[in-house]
Length: 293
DNA sequence: GGTAGACCTGGACGC
DNA sequence: GCGTCCAGGTCTACC
Figure 1 (tube, rainbow, N blue to C red):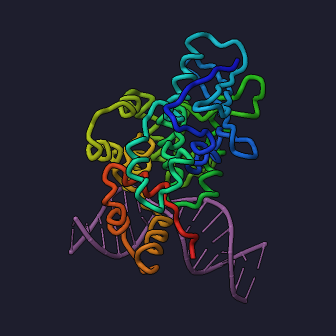
Figure 2 (figure 1 turned 120 degrees about the horizontal axis):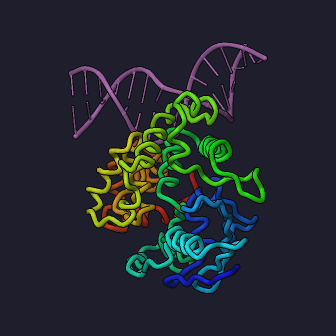
Figure 3 (figure 1 turned 30 degrees about the vertical axis):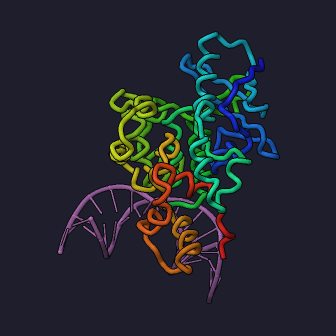
């Protein structure tokens, strides 16, 4: 089944896919040109499905297989709208970017949307797996979680969805460490999974909350393992770009751009983009950085 | 509020 | 092949 989902223009699916490294983390998959995105997802009914997103004029074509119930199809559609932020209007950002040479390309490339996972739980766990490690290890840890604990796809059991909170909540720390090789992150993942599975933590509420960004940041940082970098990363995914996810790469690039490669702190990174206000994170994210020296 | 050290893995490097 | 060093954010304890 194929269905066209419109987006608030301008919209280019490849720009969303390549907005950050999420497309490299399973169960996400892309074609060679990174123009088509696929994922495997466990729906509320328990059914595990694969769906594909193909580029279309100012929108995307959602491709599904099998006989889906109406509620299942609606769930997928709503998730795709969320993952690609189809309804969001980025024109205020583009207007401001016009006057900045380092952001000249954002409008033509329709940059601004940042690829999200089908669930905030998946986004948070993956963000946890990016902390204090190299990207190759993030990919490996994610693959381990998906392969070991995710529900298999019915017509191809070698492929899996991302594990649901309740699937991780029943594990123990030693198993997670030994099998998934997530190291000291194991208790953080378990605590999160247990909190979500038990209903103590309502992540869906965080998606739609009207809390001021500062309050939302504080709330995210109450999750064990989520510090300033991870909270800023999650805020970006939640559509709040008032903070910059300052990691070692950010420190390096900002230092190179404005501080002659001298050692700097996160304060200098935030200061470098302070004039962008609520678009600080977007300006940083899509900045046309000079190649690292 | 700021700082130091521990946490854990795997890649790079030297022997 | 083995041992050592290092990178990567967040935590807790301490000042």
